Length: 119
Figure 1 (cartoon, one colour):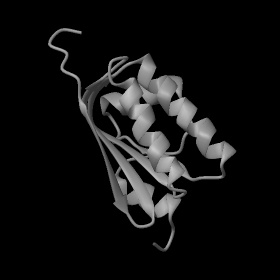
Figure 2 (tube, rainbow, N blue to C red; figure 1 turned 45 degrees about the horizontal axis):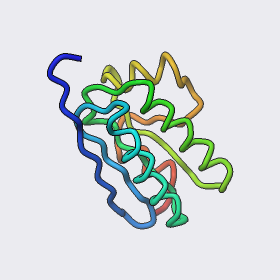
Figure 3 (spheres, helix red, strand yellow; figure 1 turned 90 degrees about the vertical axis):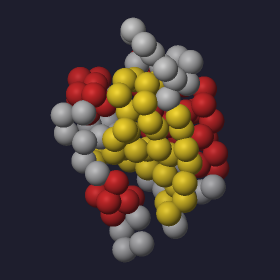
Figure 4 (cartoon, one colour; figure 1 turned 30 degrees about the vertical axis):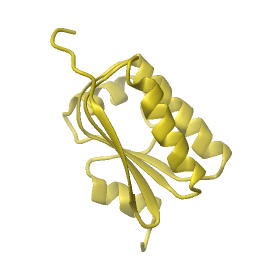
């Protein structure tokens, strides 16, 4: 990809949910950091939302990290959801590859309401 610049990853807490926010371009070079941030969020024992609304590009390494996070969530009975606005790059990629395996919402508010109702 021309002009690729590794994106950023930030982990925030909005009680009782951990939110991992990805911004920019993500590929094999940022996948270990994505996995690490998600692991730390899951270790806290709370629901986790991965916000992809500011992602411009992501490749198969990131998809693999998302599927691994799904397995971790299922194995530890934790809620896990994605934010990918309709028409965004992540939304189009997820629709092709992930389908309905991971609950995906159009915005953060909807995802938070789904993983932590009444919070």
